[in-house]
Length: 136
Figure 1 (cartoon, rainbow, N blue to C red):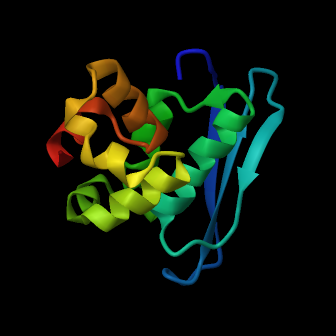
Figure 2 (cartoon, one colour):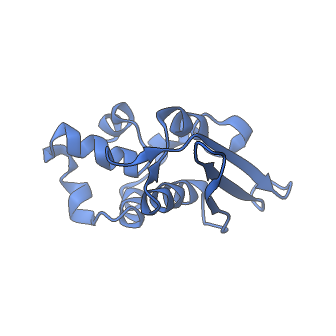
């Protein structure tokens, strides 16, 4: 992830007003305020949308800044709420890791990976290193 450029700005807005039925639109912009990508598909939950956003940015040579990841998990606007991450089950992590390009075996063996590999994995699945360490 070190070879990727950081986005300069993100936006995240809900479409629709009924919680549970609204779809979030995530957008990222470069330093010239050009839109890099938009994720607006309806997903079974917002964490999947979040990881698909990270993957789409990576395909375009970009990544989220730490402040963006923290903001998206802050509970602001009720997109993601960081405290809910601790309720995720192993199958949830498998699903998210698979979207990010990792197989179940990689998730099962994350503790044996180097700190750099763990940090890279964490960034690809939208977790900070300290969050990842708490889960595994």
